[in-house]
Image (tube, rainbow, N blue to C red; front, top):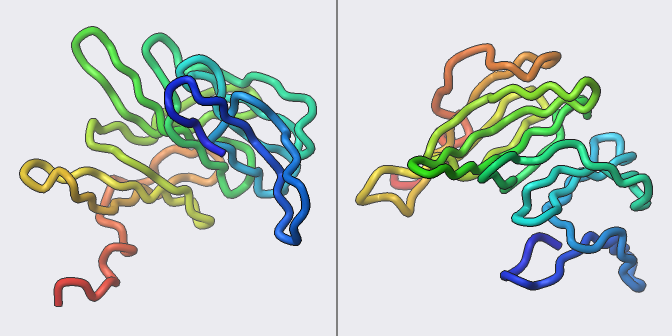
Amino acid sequence: MGPGESGEKTGIYVISIFGGVPRKLREDAGRAAVAPDAKLIAFIAGKGESELWLMSANGENARKITDAGEGGRFLQLQWSPDGRRLALLKFRSGAETSNVSIEAQELIGGSTNTIFSDQKLRSFCWTPDNRIIYSLEEPPPRSNDTNLWEIPLAPHSARATGPPGVSPVGRDFPFGT
């Protein structure tokens, strides 16, 4: 389960595809992602969805990895293909401005780097071939529309290896013909 309405309790559950009773792993947590090797679960918790946590696949050994900082909150997370990093969609609001970014958090060593930042950033995924595909909101009057873009990443550093570009994902659809 992900974050709910204001004041609503959330949690992370294991649910078998074969049926049975769901088993709660964690309360007051959401937006969970299972590591590629299925040994760890990353999730967002804390007041205002401002903390990144890890726990074992059975819900034990939970530990806080980082927080979003003053005025920050995490909107989305995803594992890197090799399971050594997490990418986070982070929103930060300040007195005068706000910012939305995709940041890569290294699990061993704890370093963080910003992959991409844009006010119109809405969502992303980290592909098995080390690209970040993300959606950007269009300017008015089409601000309800988004387009897909991509950034190639170096596999061992999660740093961009080229400029953002139009994703081939968006080019192959026969819409509007």
